[in-house]
Image (cartoon, rainbow, N blue to C red):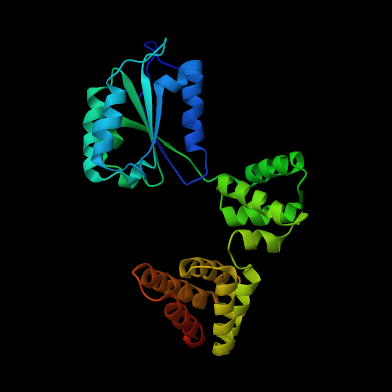
Length: 289
C-alpha cells in the first residue's frame, strides 16, 4: 500500500454487492500495514449484529482513543455492513471519526452507500466494487475444482455463475455443496443446492399460462415451489428473468408483463399471501393479449 509523506490515509468507504472482496481488501490492507501487530491495531465489527449507538460509544470509542502499537501511525476500525447502523449510531460515529482522526482510521463496508449519512460519506474516500466478471469467476472456480478434484464441466460452472450473479463467495459455496452430493456436479445438483428451480421449469409454467392452460400452469408452478423450497420472491425473480426468453409473445407484451411482475413483487414484499399473488400473476399472463 502507498502512503503519503506523513504516513497517513483517509477514512475509506467500500461500497458494492456482496461477495466482491470488500472485507478481503480491508484485511489485506491491514495485514500489509501492521504485519504481526495486526491483532492489536485492527478491530473488525459487523454493524448488522451490533448496530446500535452503544456499540459506537463503547467498543468503537474505546478502541479509537488509544494509540497504535509498533511503528503503525494509526489504528484501523473496520465496520462491516455499516449501512445497517441506525441513524443515531451514524451520527455518533461521525463525531468519533472527527475526534480521533489522529489515532484511528475507519474503513466502512456497505452494500448501499445511499444509506450512509452525508456527513460520513464526505469524510471518506469512496471505492465502488463491481460484481465480478464472468471470466474471472469461472477461472477461479476452475482452479478450485481442479485442486479439489471436483468433476464439473465448464457449462455447469457457467450455470453456477448465473446463480451467483457475480458473488464469488456464493459461487464457491454452491460448488462446494454440490460436490458433496454426488460424484459429478450437474445442473440439477446446482439448482437443488441453490434452492432454485431450473429455468426450463419456470419457462414451461409461463408458456402454459400464455396458452391459456391456467390450471395446469398453476399446479406446475406450485409443485415447483414446494419441491425446491422456494419463497415467493425467489419465484418472482426467476419469472422476471424467463419472460425475456418466451418466443410466442411480442416484445411489447413482454414489457407489460415485466411491469406486472414488479407490481406483484411489491405486493409480496408488503406482506400479501405469496400463493395468492403468484396465482393472480399467472392469470395476468392469460389476460395480457
